[in-house]
Every structure is written in C-alpha cells, then in structure tokens.
Amino acid sequence: MSLHDDAVLVLKGYGDQEELRQVYLDHLDAHPDGMWKACGDGHVTASALVIDPERGRVLLTLHRKLRMWLQMGGHCEPSDATLADAALREGTEESGVAGLTLLPGGPVRLDRHHTPCAWHLDVQYAALAPSGAVEAISDESLDLRWFAYDEVAGVADASVVRLVEAARARL
Image (cartoon, rainbow, N blue to C red; front, top):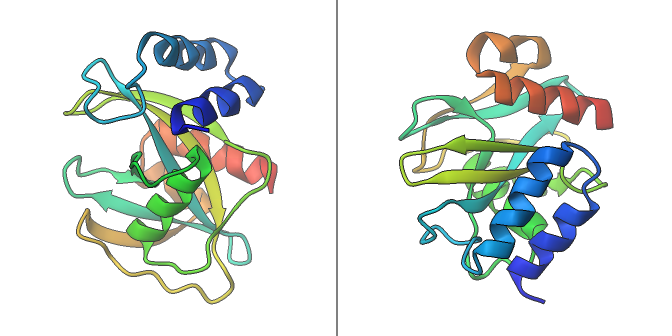
C-alpha cells in the first residue's frame, strides 16, 4: 500500500473534525502527489506531540524557520510506509528521544496551516516518552524544552494548545 493510500484510510477512519477531514480527503483525491513537499498546492504532513504523562509535560521545539514553539513534525519521506511511521520518525528525529511510542487510536487532531513552502495539511499524533527520556536538539530547532501542560498556552499558539488538550483527553 502506498503512503497516499494509507493517508486516505487513516483520514477515512478519523472520527473528528469532519469538515477539515473532508478537505484533506478532497486534496488527496485531486492530487496524487499530495503527500509530498513538491506538491505546490499543499501537502499532507505528520507530526507528533511528545508527552511525558508521568511528569505532566510536553516537549516542544522552537522551530528554526518559523521561530515558534511547536510539536515535532514535518514532511513525509519516501521511506515512510504510513502516516504513523512519518509522525514517529519526525518525533524521534526532532526530539532526540529514543523509544517513543504513539498513543493508540490514530491521529489526535488535524491542523491546516500555511507555511513558507505551501499549505500543510498536518495529521497530528501524540507520542509517549519513555520514563527518564532525555531529549537532544536537532538541526531543525533553535531550542527544545519541556513545558508543563498549563504552561503551553503562554508560549505556543492556539493550534498547539488544542493539540495538547486533545492528547490529554486521550490519555
């Protein structure tokens, strides 16, 4: 199965945000290349909010280009077999945390936003950090920091706050 086909199946199975979910499905129907950065009309991306539920905190990255505190995430790559694989890869690469596991149940939220390269149709997962997780900053980040759940609204935009709330509701 192609990554495109996996994305369609994941989105068809996602039970929330009906209108936005349909935007994603329509985009993929109209764009066979809609999973890739080269699709100038926008592309599906995958992200992972890294959570340490034992300590009531999330790990955010200060994105090098956007200069915003965000969850880990980015473009899909040909080596990604599934959207979940892409989210886990991005979460691991950008956090440096080994042993992340995705929260069961599929994506936590969808978020469509414009970036310098195009529209991102982000499929957002939550990744659980193992006990004693140690982060390591990547080249894509200016900073990497743990924030208590109630601190996120003071540093990040509303999309990240909504993602944290949705992930916590699934825990």
